[in-house]
Amino acid sequence: NTLEFTGILHTTVVKQVRVKNPSCNTLAYSAFLVGRDAENFSLSKGSTVTIPATRQGILHVEFTIRFLRPAEAVLILISNNVDGVDGATLTFSLKSEVKNIDPLGMIRCKSPCYEL
Image (tube, rainbow, N blue to C red; front, side, top):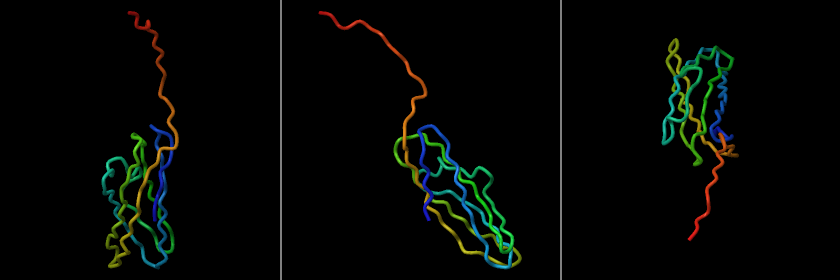
């Protein structure tokens, strides 16, 4: 799956990753961000998620758009052993795109034209 972070330059975009647990055992995952631009993404509510049986867990991924070029990273969820039960490792592709550029401020300058 791919999570797309689109927005205005210098804004922060938060996405939620919902992980469902269809089994009758509790699952726990540790989240890791890897890749070229991994330092630009963060896990705003922590890097672990515990999912009770037949429920779902939510992981919050945050990205602050600092550059015009697209950013890419991978979110990896690695299962932690809970009561002898391991879940599958999950991966998500993270991509960003700048949709608009709003100036932070404007500066007006006046100067005389060049004269010979």
